Image 1: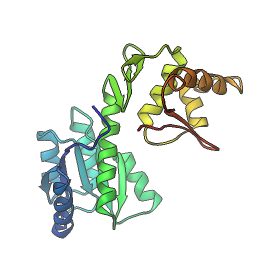
Image 2: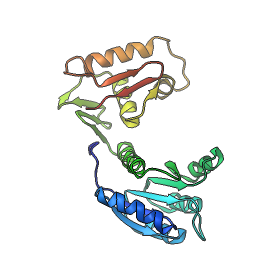
Image 3: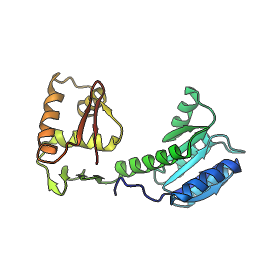
Image 4: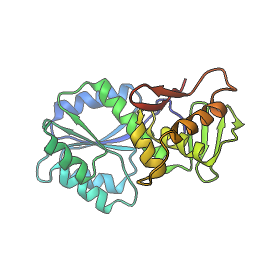
Length: 230
C-alpha cells in the first residue's frame, strides 16, 4: 500500500447522464474503472453485490434518494465502502444529513473533475490506512499490531507515546492534526502537563528525523502537526 495514485474500481450513482458521462470520461482517462446506476435502488443493489473501492453517490435520485441509499449501504454491507456524496445543496444542514447517513465526504455541484479525483484517491487511501495493520507512507512503515515504526527500512527505537503520535499523524495524512486534537487522541479528557506534548514531540524528532537527510515531522505554526512525505 502506497500513497501513489492507484486505479480505483468505482460505482457512480447519478441520474443525470451528462454529468455521469463527464465524470466517467475524465476518470477513465486517469485509469479508474467505473460501473453505473441511474436510480437509487439499482445503485444499492450493485454496491451490495460487487466489490467497489468507492461509491460516488448523487443526493437527488429518483425513487430512492442518496441519503436512503447511503443509509442502506451502511446498514447492510459487511464492509465499510467509502462513499463520496454529490449534491447541489450546500447548506450545513444538508451536509450534516449526509454525514449522519454515513457519507465519508461531500462535494457540492458544480465541482472540478480534478478535485473529484483527488477526493476519491484521498478517501480510498484514508480507508486503507484505517483498516490495514500496516500503514505505509513513503519511507515510513507503521506496524500497528507490533507497535513498531521503520523509516527507510530502519527500525526506530521509539517510546510508546512516540509510536502513538506518529500513528495519529499517519492516519490523518495529508491533513494537519491540531494540537488540541492530538492531545485528545493521546490523553483523552485526562489532564496533562502543559509541556508534555512539547517533550514528546522533541523526543520523536530526535529518533524520526535527526539521523536522516530530511525531516518528516512538520510543525504548522499556530495550528498543529503533519507529516511531510517526499
